[in-house]
Structures are given as structure tokens and as C-alpha cells.
Length: 472
Image 1: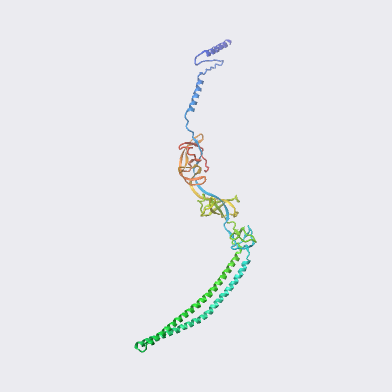
Image 2 (image 1 turned 120 degrees about the vertical axis):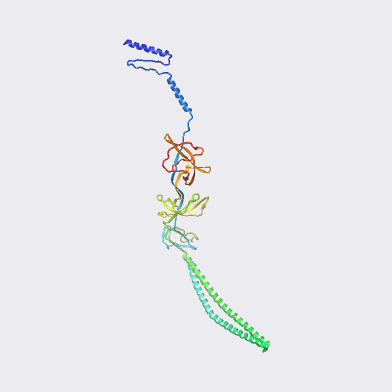
């Protein structure tokens, strides 16, 4: 046993000495233990070589030019849908049946029989003016009518009496004219006979001249009788017409005054023209009635419309018949449906702002009261089955509208990678946030928002997450 240990120690000593003095690159050493295990030492140059190789590979990797990384972007998918264009405005509810009543004449108010909020029936008295003076004037006017009627009757009686005298005068004139005509005829016959006798020398020229003078005198009497008859006829007709015309004119004037005063008396009382609710009372007993201004206003509840002034920049598409959604501030839980019933043809200007008034009829007004404020949304156009994209994906360059479309490629690190290209499009219709367009198809992926011109180039790689099915 001791001899074996010594041999082992000798071998070990010899090995240690050889390790320190040997110049061989490889030292072979075998140690045999009790169980016969053998170990071989590594070459000394391997570790430095591995370190140098690792540094070289790292340097090569760092110094080699890299391919540009894909630009991360956000995309949205175009879709086929219906684009709904609408305009909004805030307006006031007004009664469809609203009557403004005023006193046509002047006077002091003696009584007011209603107040705001009262329900009234058609024909019910609302207010009254003092009518004492009007009643006195009416009584005097009626007396004047009676007097004028009597004057007319007397004039007509006078005409009847005058007609009797006229008949006698006419008869006398006609008789005189007949006698004058008969005398003229006799004188003409005598003249003819004298002229015949003169021709045979039976009478002298003096006799013929005497017959001629008699004939001429008879003719003058006929003319005078005709003038007398004509004068009698004209004088009697003019007198009768003047008397009757004057009397009838006086009677008509008196009747007109009575009618006017009666109307003033009737107008002194305001009656409800329709059944409804009193919405305003602008008169008080004991004070003068306002001339040309409203005294009482009546509205019919339940029949109201919304009057909305729409800004001129958004009113171009408004048309009668368009549907509207109305939300009243006083009824936050109710949304009413209405229809545009009127669009004013002329804009109204207030300061520097112009607006167009539109009426929205509300068939189911319910609890809505005149004066309530509401917001109305009117649908002005629907573009059906069109490609719809977010408006923020578009940009205008050189007079053209374009978007950036992504062509899908591969998947890298869980993200889609594709190439981007500009596409010119045409906008069919737009809203504040969306646009209906031509030049794209449903499913096209678009950069959103539209990038600045220098931010992206055609053909550039972009990475993106696949958009969800949420509408843009």
C-alpha cells in the first residue's frame, strides 16, 4: 500500500513540473484514481478565440446597413352604408291656431272678463270699451234716417203732383202744335192755289205775296209750338229727377252713418273667434285701449308647430316634407317626430348673421305648450348603398381629394404589414364627420387621419392593427 501511494505522488510531482516547464501547446495528463477515472485538459487558445469571434459577429451586425422599419399607422375600413345628412337648429313652439284680437277704434276699456290661462269658448265676450258716446251718436243717426226718409217721400209726392201739371202743360202744347201744323197746311195749300191763278193771270202778284206771308207765319207758329212742347217735357223731367235724386242721396248718407256707428258699437266688444286658451291680455279696465296693438291673444292648445331659424350655411338643403326629430328642453324624456311644412323664401338678417326660418309641424304635440324651446334635427338627404368613409381620412391637394389606401401584405410581430398608396376620389355628399365617395370599394383600408404630404410616401411599408367592425 505505501509503495502504491508513493508511486502516485511521484507521478503527480513529475506532472506539475512538466506543466510549468513545457512549451508544448497541448499538455496531456492522465490521472488514474482508485476508480480508474481519466480527464483531459482543454487547449488554452479556445476561450480567447470564442471571445474574438463573438465580438466580430456583434460588430458586423451593428455595422451592416438595416432595412427601414414599417411605419406604424392607424387604419379604418371603408364600408357600404347609407349616408344621412342633417341640419340642426333651435326654435320655439308656436300655436297653429293663434288669434290676435284688438279694438279697431279708440276708447276707454270698461271691462276685461278674462285672464291669461282661461279657457274660452267661441263667441264668449273677452273685453269691452266705453260706448256711451257711440250710442248717443247712433240714436241721432237713426233719427236722421227717419227724417231723410220723410224728405224722400215728400219729394216723390211732389214729383207725382208735378207730373199731373206736366201732363196738362204737355197736352196744351201738343194741341197748340197740332193747330199750328193745320194752319200751316192750309196756308201752304192757299199759296199753291194763288201761284196757279197767277200763272193764268187771274190774280195779281200782291195776292201771291200775301199768301206767301201767311204760309211763313204759320210755319213760325209751328216752330214755336214745337219749342214750347220740348221745353215743357224737359223742364218737367229735370225737376222730377233732381228732387228724387237729392232725397235718395240724403237717405243713403244717413243709413251709412247708422251702419258705421253700429259697427263701432259692435267693435267695442271683443269676442272669442275660436275656442282656446287665453295666452295674453294687454288691456286693463279704466285705461285707453292700445290703438293697432293686441288686446287679447287666444291659442288652441295641442296644435303647435316649431319655428326654427336655421343658419344660412346649412339651410340650402331644407325642403317641405323632410322628416325631423324634435327634442324639447321641458320634456327631456320625449322625442317627437315632425315634418317640415314651410321654408321661408327669404332669409332674415340679424346683425351679421343671416338665417332661414322653417316650420316643423308636430302632429303629436301632447304636453308641448306654445313658447317651449326645442332642438330640431332635419334629415335633408339620404345617399343609399354608397361607400362611406370618415371625413378625416381625406385631404385636398392641387384641387383633388385623395386618401391613402393600404394594400395588405404579411404579418410581422403580430401586426399587419402592407404598402400604402394615394388614391384620388370624388365626394358625392358629406356630413360633419363622414363622406359618401366614388373611387373606393367597401373594405378598402385607409390611413386615419390623413397624413401630411411629407409624412408618408407611395409604396412605403406600414404596420397596423386590423380594424374592428365598428363603423367609422
